Amino acid sequence: SSELTQDPAVSVALGQTVRITCQGDSLRSYYASWYQQKPGQAPVLVIYGKNNRPSGIPDRFSGSSSGNTASLTITGAQAEDEADYYCNSRDSSGNPSVVFGGGTKLTVL
Amino acid sequence: QVQLQQWGAGLLKPSETLSLTCAVYGGSFSGYYWSWIRQPPGKGLEWIGEINHSGSTNYNPSLKSRVTISVDTSKNQFSLKLSSVTAADTAVYYCARVGYSYGLEYYYYMDVWGKGTTVTVSS
Image 1 (tube, each protein chain N blue to C red):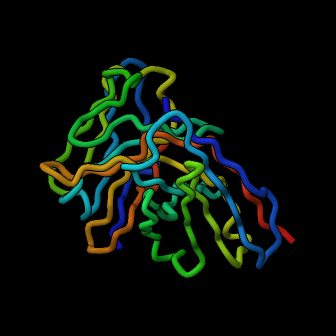
Image 2 (tube, one colour):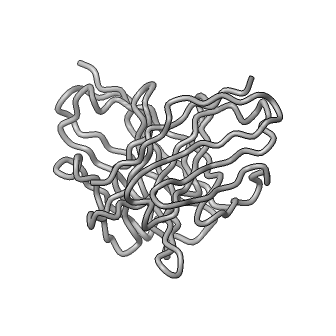
């Protein structure tokens, strides 16, 4: 089955821009979805499809994709954006499965 | 607004069967897939499987031999059973609604999540 690879940790200064990446073969076929998870809480969908934000998600969150790499960009990171971020897609290897990246811990300095 | 409420036994002994149910309130049940995901303590998310209102299922190959996901459309509920549990199955288990597009753009996402159920396997 496919795998999605994320950097374990990323940091950003308050108010600056940060990009979190996700790599995997399935991303050549599927756009990634992105989830934010804060300690003790369920994940929250922040980006899906080409660059779609669910209702209530701030527009500082955006998504992009190139080849086998998907990116989540936070423009003007806020203290409340400190969280774990996971990417996800359908497996494109012919197996009707679903894969998650290992997660990226975002620290806002 | 769609809400998912989940419940089930939180403490199991090795070799027992984990059983969780997720109820869907406030929205359509048909037309979606419904998924189970788990997260071991301090680790990432792992997809377990999914089901639609017709009972069509897909499972994680690594868990397929032990997993059964079923649906009760009369109650707008879906359930997870995981047999022969071990300590490695200790995790927070989430249910979620699945959205997808297989048209001009291909994408897959989970937009509504339950609050999670902590399941501990210990002798």
